[in-house]
Amino acid sequence: MGLDSRDYERMLDVATAILHTHQPERLWPWLAEELLESLHGTAAIHKDEEWTENRGTVHAWTSGGVAEVDPRTGRHVRIGLPFPWYMRGDALCLPATGSEILGPAWYDGEAADRAREAFDADDVLGLPVASQDGVVRGFLVYHRAEDFTDRERAYAERIQPLLAGADAQSHRLRRWRSSVSESEERAAEYRLTPREVVVLGLLAEALPAVAIARRLGVSVRTVHKHVQNVYRKLGTSDRVSTILRAQWAGLIASGARTPHDARHPATSFSGHTPHPAIRKTAH
Image (cartoon, rainbow, N blue to C red; front, side, top):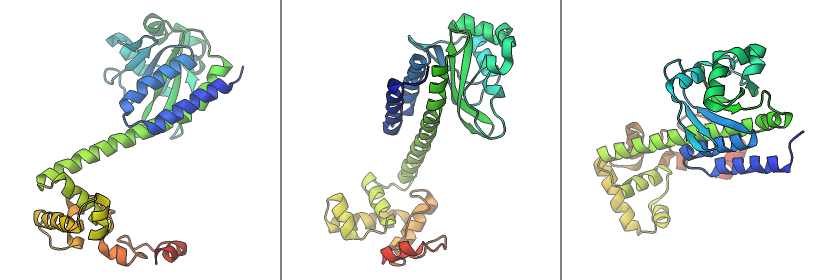
């Protein structure tokens, strides 16, 4: 039995949720619930960090919500199949079960015993979504039947790229939050107000005072006042030195433009020359 329109509708819902989320910590429980329902699982576990025998958080969900994982079960989840055998080089494998990797020996192993006791499951499907520095991230879905159906396997393969997208989005959001937090700390060190930080960012876009005033809905005189405050607090006297100082201090991205770039759009700090079509539209 293959996938039907309802399966594709569910995957569309997953894609929409990934694109619109700003809180990835809320996304993973919802994705775990989706996997449990679509794959008829008894438990889903999200792996987002390196696991060793005695270290690594095991986030588990069942149809009843968040599930507690005792230390013994957590140990077998971390060292058991399929993640430790998943990677071949740098390429992610397709979803696979413990029984596929070990064969009939899987059902006689201690990891399978723990799966039956803790999750009322006969097998486990691994869904790797990313690999970085030798650490595999993804989901484990435990299943009561001894084999996943063709439809369940097809669904797992189709949703795998979406889960990979969710993982990438989650890590981008975390990095963004971290950078915002660091920028706020650095701004506090220079005693910059939130409005002065905004003005500094607009200066980095090489906007003139009139455009900044229009963007912020204030007078040009107010913009000049903010700019002078920024100069004073950063110890600078003009836009170029202010932007370079702000880049050095980590207040703005190092790739920000300067007024020199605005006057000479065909060049940049990197020394690269844009494509002729870009130069044509820039003048």
